[in-house]
Length: 252
Ligand SMILES: NC(=O)c1ccc[n+]([C@@H]2O[C@H](COP(=O)([O-])OP(=O)(O)OC[C@H]3O[C@@H](n4cnc5c(N)ncnc54)[C@H](OP(=O)(O)O)[C@@H]3O)[C@@H](O)[C@H]2O)c1
Image (tube, rainbow, N blue to C red):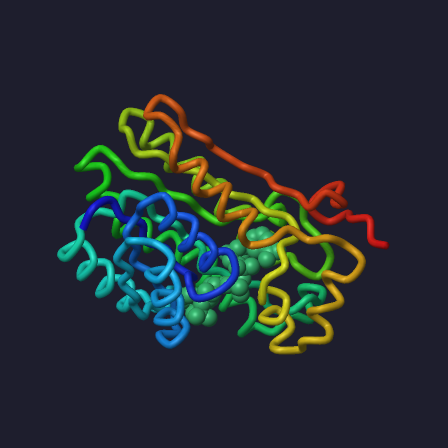
């Protein structure tokens, strides 16, 4: 394999768009999520559009044993990724913390924090050994500005930001780079997942505002991984034009 990117959460939304954007830059891809059928569809479309090889791989990032199994197979087969995009993530519910289901709390922590930390932990030593590679973590403006009904989600994304800052310090003497991408409002199936499949409630989130597209974020990721060796983009905060901060937006 030539240079390759491993993208978690590549079956949908930002991760899926990132697969297309990095393929366009010539990266072969290993794309991971829990849904093989969706990954196969992404593979088919990407390979039809670009001359790259795409390997789909089933991975539930909440499952520690599965992470170790998948990362060891990937390392054995392809070596350390040139780009690791830790995109798999979700929000569940929009209620005050006291009313949030324990199951939802744990799913957000296990996916957004534990999964991202452990996937990184498995790949990082090989990147350091090779002295190259770029870790791109999907944080959120939610990690910078908390909003109502999202204490756990916001805390999980704040963890992504400070985790990225911490490993960047560890990696100062190496050529390995770390970037946190912190999008505001991006129209994807994210809200549908948050509201456990309630499409009408999800559609309401994006009513009256021109939200960002997954491609806006994917293009930004394609930009940050293509900077010169001397340059490392630490954070990118991307708001929809009608957003004033992470939680404040003008809606028509
Ligand atoms: N949309 C926004 O407004 C927004 C803003 C800021 C940050 N973000 C962040 O951007 C990332 C992508 O979100 P999105 O908007 O693109 O949402 P999305 O369309 O729902 O995509 C989420 C992706 O994560 C994967 N995923 C979820 N749980 C997983 C698990 N346990 N194991 C493996 N993969 C898992 C899903 O794949 P499967 O279901 O196939 O497993 C899917 O590919 C998330 O980290 C999110 O927090 C989104």
